[in-house]
Amino acid sequence: MDYQIDILKVGEFTACPGVQLYWMSNLGDDEWEPLAVYAMLVRGGGRTILVNSGPPLDELDTLNAIWMEGTGGKQKLVVREEDRILNRLAALHVDPADVQDLVLTPLQSYATGGMDLFPNARIWVNRYGWGELFAPRWKPHPHDRLHMCIVPRLITYAFVDAWERLMMMENEHDLAPGVHVFWTGVHHRSSVAVQVQTRQGTVVFSDCFFRYENITQNRILGINENMYEALVAYERIRRTADILVPMYDLRVLEDHPGGRIGYHC
Image (cartoon, rainbow, N blue to C red; front, side):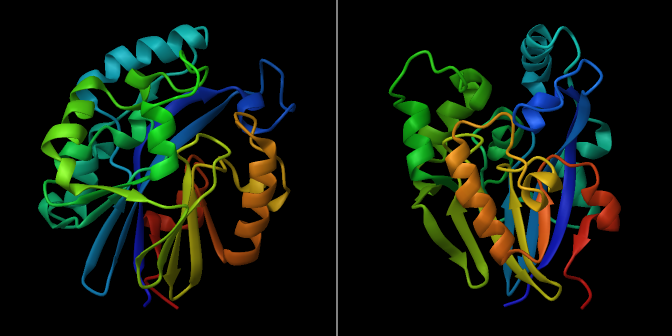
């Protein structure tokens, strides 16, 4: 099965320290770079699959205050009107009620924040990552602050309103023919890669690499929780991917105008 993919920009971080992009590198104050935040729409064979749902717009000011406090006022998530997930989907004539599957990676607010906008979608999360978020071995966790991962009202939504649609993926999961999800770790315990077959080849979309160079040059992600996971994941992705989609690299839309992949051979 070959799918068509639309990469959807749902926000942009104004700046990110270079050392978060590349391990023990790009340390200077002049090495900060902006980050895109992408979702991915996958369509084909009667399936409509969305990877990530954008940030919670009603909590954006609160989240930005925390991000800015931790970065000396440099890092802020900007969501323009056209970046709102429902506006991105409307431009493609996609009704949110028609989304059948929603994959979340990682469990962070900019990915989970619109999960309640898709009333019929099964919500897919990695079982291990979900457990590590809600039953962490260390409290407070140094990387995952619960309210920054899923805002409180959406925790209630997931555990009450959407409970029957909340689905746990094992570390290797076939979501549909030609769509495979595998656990990567690296960035967060909940991080996965989504591998999609298209006419142009196999696409891999993940937050375990922020920049193309993480994969192509084996430059380990700076904000990693385990570099050995990175080495394993990057080797696998290099072996299997024809097209890389780093979840935060602004160059993705330069390489794929309009965010379209798989529409032509």
